[in-house]
Length: 410
Image 1 (cartoon, rainbow, N blue to C red):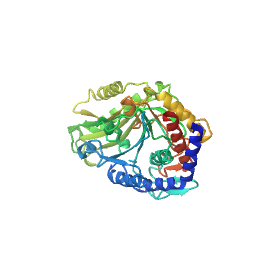
Image 2: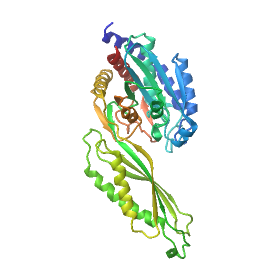
Image 3: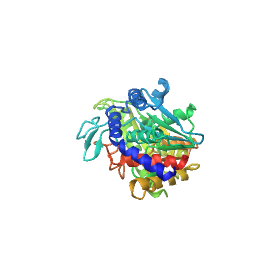
């Protein structure tokens, strides 16, 4: 049978199972897996049972508690489904099941998987539990139809993307539990993502000396020093607008001071203030050089303040995601198959976010990002109240993934 006939057969199977696919997505959305706090093992065990009910063999790989906790998780079990079709390359399809906490402002229960006007609303519906459904049903279509391929497909459902991925794909790769030839990771929109920003998180602890508010001159005000530091950081931020990325979809580096904590009481000179900051790194920048540069800004700002000491700790350093190896081939196939499934031009882009897709690329594995979703992450309310995914994109993305596998492995 020729490829076109195979693709038509696969498309018919996916359309026939559309309601079942939506029901599967609802179940994985309705089970909370917030990170933080990162107690994600229950969601993994529930998902594993759903997959086994579909006759998919599931490996449960528990991350050791000590390592999971070192990355900010309470518990994590990563899942691998391996489907052997024939001799040839292995393609991994990776989506993450951990999600950010729901926050406020929702019009529905964040875990209700409410369907409204053709959209499913729920935390994780778009990022990235929708691609649990996309990748599972693409694999099922190929398996249940007995499509002959020269290669293998793996599902990697992991639980550490929101805190960096080191206990997710990073751990699977480090432990030698998988070594695919290609990887496709959960996407955000109609486009095929080929690059994204890196990210540096630094924690700065400014230490002074406490004193009674009636005698502030007897202490050293850590908050006053931190204010000077923030002024320097914002001045540094203004210089970043002159660094432009050449990657479509990515503009300039950025820096945000995300949290500030400190002080003892209203009537006490603050002896300690802690800041945490997020510095986004464009693909053209070197992550180590960015960290050195930012540390110099901090050191210079604090240099001549009497009684003030400053400790800087790296919390996260995620390198930018860039094409490696044969990623262009994967990109071109997915753009073509996505276009055929959607009926619109699908183009490669970069995004200013960061994800655990970078970990596959860092291991030398050609990687792109693609999956179900609306035109933009903003349309999906990603990480915001009423996160949502258009259900019409589920079969579209599923067909594109299955057809890509046929093109790559048939």
